[in-house]
Image (cartoon, rainbow, N blue to C red; front, side, top):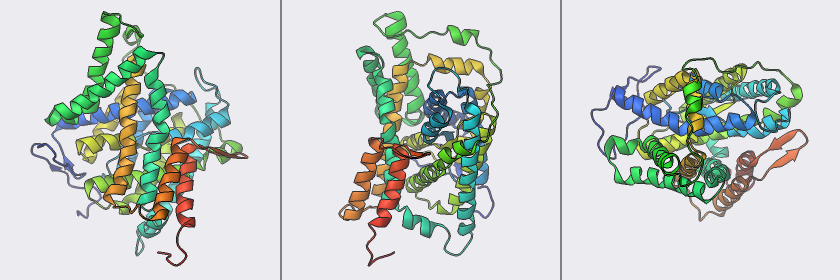
Length: 440
């Protein structure tokens, strides 16, 4: 392991089928750009959907996802491959404190932004504590692993995908049978690229699958007129190439902060699950970077909230891409971040996003959110979680149902949605069921 802050990236000479590209390795620049574009495709559906649900500007969200990813990259020294996108954990709290009812911009966005910044600060402080513990004998991993072992982190990662499943299915079903069939067609396009292609094309299965699905959808609707809503490019033609997104200023309100700041715990769990998943996939122990990763994510959330962006988190969608491509080079995410920043300053790109048919996005969501759930199961498999142990069995079973069923709790101003309830539930349940005779 290099003693330098950043790794000395080694160039991979050719990529044979099944080759694993490690974080400190790099591809050729054409391959870096192609893989970076695929990660942008993987994240932008959810990164755009989250601000739309909260009344935020999607272009700001895209822009700050790129900026946040670069901030994260700097804090972890390029050692942890990750993309930061809009966090769904904020949606319930933002809607609660702003009273947003959908349809257009959120007129009370400032109150939400102030609370998001406060949440980012709390998250950063947690990260600094863990970072400090990492520098001490034994590090932070011992007590983190005690409270959040693989059975817990695997369940948390899995329920993120399962909790988002209804969103994907609703989007896929659209307004009728035709939309549902087009969503299934999208799934088949991605599956066909994944199974029947080879080499670089196979590793770009998300991007290629999306393009093929859009072409087929346009053929069925615009050309053959078989049904559905035709793709309309008039908005793209009218939009300028370069322009500023709609920035907003934060307003700090104590009541709003009390609702949204607890989301920091969910972000910790998401980030921890991400690092555990990447550790399992790469065969590397990345626990030493936990504190730095938390701080990077927290600072990125504060910067995003300061200009009108959503809170950000390490994106499991991109874990799904890494799972199928086996390319973990952290430089790929620098390229992806730069692409996102450029796109964030392009109203034409924002208009282009709107042309992607809903059923196609729904089909892509089914694939990507499913890969998230499988990434959680992979943590169990790689860490050989023993499900003959009733404690592990109960923790995993209850967590999955709470998350998938979106079990929510409201305690005064404090509100937890399904992901939050399942996250705390998994941690607390595992602690409560620890045998008193064995406190390891």
